[in-house]
Length: 372
Ligand SMILES: Cc1cc2nc3c(=O)[nH]c(=O)nc-3n(C[C@H](O)[C@H](O)[C@H](O)COP(=O)(O)OP(=O)(O)OC[C@H]3O[C@@H](n4cnc5c(N)ncnc54)[C@H](O)[C@@H]3O)c2cc1C
Image 1 (cartoon, protein in one colour):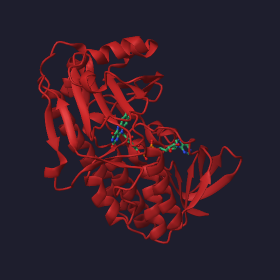
Image 2 (cartoon, helix red, strand yellow; image 1 turned 30 degrees about the vertical axis):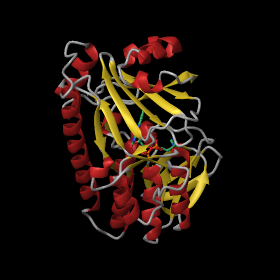
Image 3 (cartoon, helix red, strand yellow; image 1 turned 90 degrees about the vertical axis):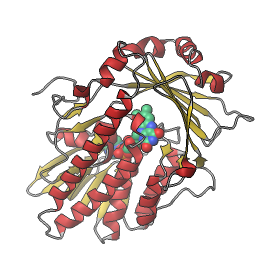
């Protein structure tokens, strides 16, 4: 029997597996591993490198495929474009990742440390006398003492185990990926607030521009249905249009849920959730990957602690995640409240309302129904 089975080998699951394997635990990582496509969520802040180094994990080093980001260019709270330079950041520059390869590097580090890996989907898990009986989509059944849900925003196993999802303000991201640009150089992330939401833009390591509009789900339909409407809205920006106006985008757009949110509880009887499965972040916070790495590390340490007989390990894990959530909420609130130009527009009304980012929001199941 495995000490732990981890569903999902994104940054959170692979780091949890790596930590457990290095402690000598029998750990199995399970993921379908989609074919090589562009995975959105590719800006890694410099702070993440400290964590990767401390865990002896691969660090972007200027060799391909990942490319350095020198800073941000943002138009937020004013039409002016403000530059933030990572040169002044003690953690140094950030990185634009090839996310598929970054995730693969972390998975390989985990298996090199001794974790097992199966390319499969976890379909369901049943708790039977202190152990899990876990069913995979290749027909295999595996048994484990602990189950770690690192399935990303779906948090499918924690929800099956009874945890509820609490969504903050609803946010959809509509992304266009452009044809690679030969002459175009931009080593910054651009962010621009507009009446209906905010735009994000950068250049992927492949040279392909990535441009996304973040807006309320009810406003997304008109843009998702017509690429011309999305392109027209982009051309109405002051700064992003100046940099990306000449790009030819591949359509259809990708529509992604970008809302922040959390599980009602991060741990339960024999299970624990980490990464986006435990709590997800509005991308404006630029906190997703670094928090996934961090909670994956803490998840591995917590399970090892429990197996060693430490009765406080789960409580420490829960309270650390609550701290991260508190810091995130306060950061997000201050970012949205610093944009005051369109206070009566429904996007900014919703995102700036503190109750949409408060722990008092009702818990929702994944069906969207209010449960309590
Ligand atoms: C629009 C958008 C933009 C973003 N931009 C950024 C950014 O620029 N910078 C940043 O830091 N963060 C960003 N993020 C957030 C970041 O992508 C996530 O926080 C991060 O990927 C979370 O890592 P994870 O390991 O928890 O989950 P994921 O990376 O989502 O990995 C989950 C894994 O679980 C697997 N899986 C799912 N279900 C099962 C199952 N049943 N069985 C087996 N495997 C399963 C999946 O195949 C996947 O590999 C963004 C998010 C969005 C939505």
